[in-house]
Amino acid sequence: WALETVDGASAYASAPLPALDSPGVALILGNEVTGVDQSVLEHVEHVVEIPTHGTKNSMNVACAATVVIFDVLRRWGVGVS
Image (cartoon, rainbow, N blue to C red; front, side, top):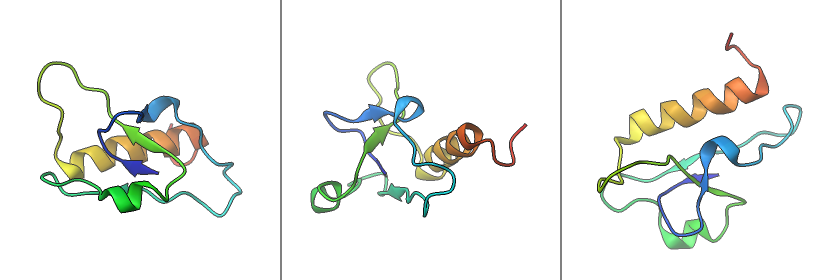
């Protein structure tokens, strides 16, 4: 996965996850100014975003990572009750 706000990105909560017993999932994060490079986005299985409302469409990268990683673990049923 790459976490980036671009046309065609899926909401993180509805993007398909690999099975828990698969080799895993990588989350690629860009910085708050330039994001994830297009050459990287071309090689990921899914580009996901955190839906936002209003005119702002960016979020601190540490906060964004926390939101998405928590949801992946929750959906896998790992360490979250």
